[in-house]
Amino acid sequence: MAVPKRRSSKSRSRTRRAHNQVKPVQLAYCPQCGTPVPTHVACPNCGYYQGRTVIETED
Image (tube, rainbow, N blue to C red):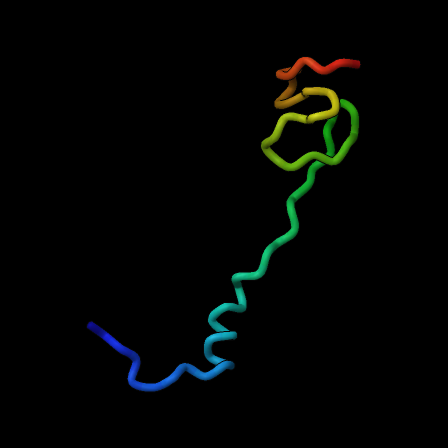
């Protein structure tokens, strides 16, 4: 089994992990009611998604 010959330095392991940070959620605005909604998700406020109402809401 392969085992590292030398210990990885802090800078080397931190450089490798530089792209592992959590990115903010992408939000788009609902064209029907204007509330911010995550992309590719039906609007929880009005139920609108891709040009039609897919979820019935109590308004």
